[in-house]
Amino acid sequence: MMALKQTSIKDWYSILGADPSATVSDLKQKYQKLVLMYHPDKQSADVSAQTVEECIQKFIEIDQAWKILGNEETKKEYDLQRLENDLRNLGPVDAQVYLEEMSWNEDDHSFSLSCRCGGTYSVSKEEAEEVTLVSCDTCSLIIEILHYS
Image 1 (cartoon, rainbow, N blue to C red):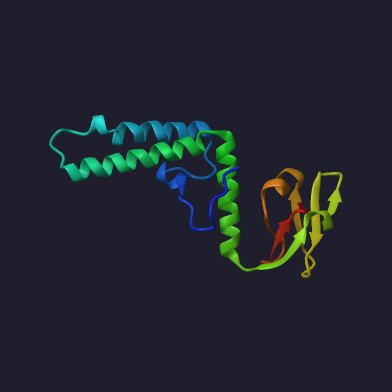
Image 2: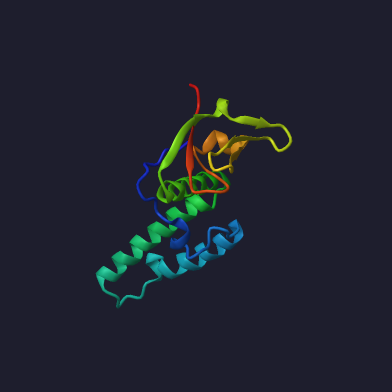
C-alpha cells in the first residue's frame, strides 16, 4: 500500500474536472476529452514554447490522475487518503484506541465505540484495515485506530 505523507494530496478529481462521486466510466470520458485537448501533438504550430510546456505539464497531470482514478484499487486507496486528510483537517484527534478495544457487531460486521457525547464511532471490518481516523456520528470528535503489531 502506498503511504502518502499527511501533506496536502493532489486533487486528482479536480484535475479531471470530475466530482469524487463520479463513476469510473464518467472519469474515463473526462480523461479522454482532456487528453485530446492537451496532447502535445494536438497543439497548433503557432503557440509559444511556454504554452506547449504548460500543455505538456497539464497532460502529464491528467495522465497521472487517470492512472490513479481509473483503477479500482488505487482509486479506493486515494479516496481513503482524501477522507483521512479531510478528517485530520476537521479537528484534533481526541483519543487513540486499539481496534481490539472496540466492540464487534456481528450483525453489520463493524467495530464501534461509544463517544463521550453519547454518539458512536463506527467502522466496518474492511475500513478498519485501511482507515486510521474515525469521526463520531454525533459530534466532531475523532479517534485514531491503532493495531497491535
